[in-house]
Image (cartoon, rainbow, N blue to C red; front, side):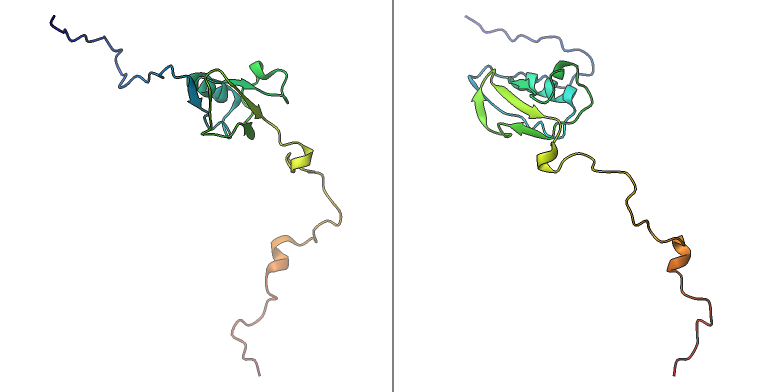
Length: 127
């Protein structure tokens, strides 16, 4: 029996196609720093599912960034395992933007003028 070489058509502009092997275990991708929509797509492409305990509306979240994940990136887990992601560091971890209201005492007035030397002869001889 002779083997025939089969060539499949590839759409224009496509250089390569990534085919994920259907292995029983997959590596957890790095999701920290990704937006929610990108984290969902990356997880799906790698064969894991996402859960976000701090976001009940996780399926609608788009532009919030992942700040923490468990299990960590690179760990082998069974295909279809759940990776938990968080979008807010919370008060206990020092996250958040902090207090932005003005605090007393206020900075002294004068601005840049306060930083300049007093006017005088720049070449004055000191004795």
